[in-house]
Amino acid sequence: VGNFTNEEGCRFHTDMLGSAVATGRLPLDEAWRLEDSDGRSIEAELKRIGFLGDADPLAMRPHAYVECHVEQGPVLGHAGVDVGVVTGVQAISWYELALTGNACHAGATPMELRRDPAAAAARVLGWVQEMATSGTYGEAMRATVGSLRALPGAINVVPARVEATVDMRNPSDADLERAERDMLAFLDELAEGSGVQIEQRRIASTPAVPFDAHVRELIAACADSLDLSHRHILSGAGHDAQEWARIVKTAMVFVPGQHDGISHNPREHSTPEQCAAGVNVLLRTLLALAEEE
Amino acid sequence: VGNFTNEEGCRFHTDMLGSAVATGRLPLDEAWRLEDSDGRSIEAELKRIGFLGDADPLAMRPHAYVECHVEQGPVLGHAGVDVGVVTGVQAISWYELALTGNACHAGATPMELRRDPAAAAARVLGWVQEMATSGTYGEAMRATVGSLRALPGAINVVPARVEATVDMRNPSDADLERAERDMLAFLDELAEGSGVQIEQRRIASTPAVPFDAHVRELIAACADSLDLSHRHILSGAGHDAQEWARIVKTAMVFVPGQHDGISHNPREHSTPEQCAAGVNVLLRTLLALAEEE
Image 1 (spheres, rainbow over the protein chains, first blue to last red):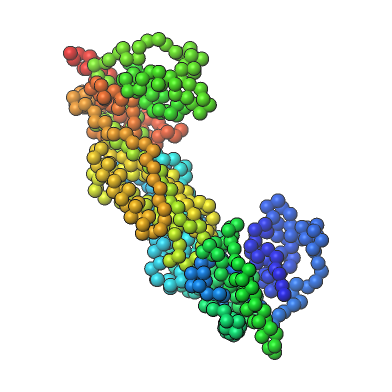
Image 2 (image 1 turned 45 degrees about the vertical axis):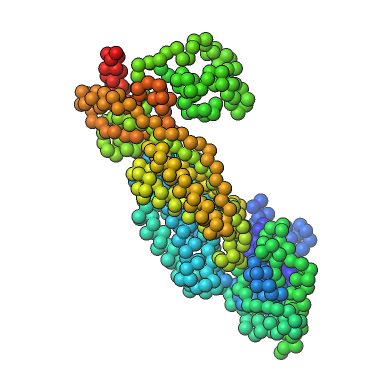
């Protein structure tokens, strides 16, 4: 049984920190040197709280890795099933966009003399939505503009600048790369056509991680043996399991969440019954794996 | 020669304050009672600085009113003309919009289970841009989304809410009203189709003010007599002249601005030559009007 520190990467900015070290992707001394926003290192903080151990983090190489987690989404709840058999973690790509035009008087400037970054941003948002819903990049393509802001932000001033982010996810690395290429080509075209300057920066990119077919079958069989309904589901979020999948056979069990699976929110909730179902499937799967060579 | 206080309405929130009182639209005692954000009244502040006079503000009823102002836009500069003969002030309508959906995990929530206010906002921005450029509401329709903000504004969270403003202007009251009606119908339809709740509030509305044809002709003739090139232009911004136009024959002379007519900005600038041209046209127009009955 393992519990890996700092999966979220909030205070020290690498998510999956503990499992990245335990699986050898991130060297221990590099991890120790990571600093929080006050300049305090992980090493100094572990020492201060008495948790700077001397065990070799790479010493334990398990036979398999199985993780139970809340879905953080609405799929299982809407399908009315007890547990999810996770097929993998989708590829993720994050972009920051800055659209720069020309601030001017909303009353005195004719439409044809404007370089309006809000009008260009509307085209970007529309394109992103179409990208995710058209099926061009597969049925599971997801895209989100989570952050969006016009500056200076006055009712009677055409904005000088609009800042936005795009979060793109796809189970297929190839489909995601194609979507990214097409978006960048669209942004170039839009900048040329609108006279609005568009800067883009990819600030995160992680490939898709497929989970082990044998472990997934075991999870499904164990759910069946407990009379629990289940379905395959792709993880939309990142998890420690994606680190372990690189080195041992790995899969995950998902538990449904209440309130449409709302997550990272005080309203996030799974019932004790839902949790018990997931953990019982996890336990049976581990017992079956423990019998293997 | 008149100089009217508080045309902008910044500290005391009625624009055209001085001319609204002098033309009888706003009673003097109502104006005196207006308070700034610290609760100090105009009456008390005028008294404090020694400017609370006892003359009747309605005593002076001029034969005509002519005002020279910087254009605050790029039209005259782009046309390369010396002065603008202002045909009137366009009608203005301001709206605040709030689009409320359902915040959720950008990775874990399939597109078809979202109620995404940013996707709905993209449709609104696109509709507003189309409204202003399609010609459906006349060639001079202008519309601007100056303020735009997604909340909570995190890259990997589908927004809960998007707030935006719409500034709409048109020389025709009827065309502007038609545009407003169509926008509200579009918002209703969009809310119904997207599952996103859309609240709208009209926060300002002023009708169009056409200027006097005779005074406009005089201005054009005076510009000709000074060998100054000119063209007709509609004012995008509000001016004291719109108050006087209710009670006496009124028009305006516009002077071009440098830097694409940037305004309400430290870079706003008209050259001494540009200002002299405008003021000379104003003077000749006034001298001609002074000869009238």
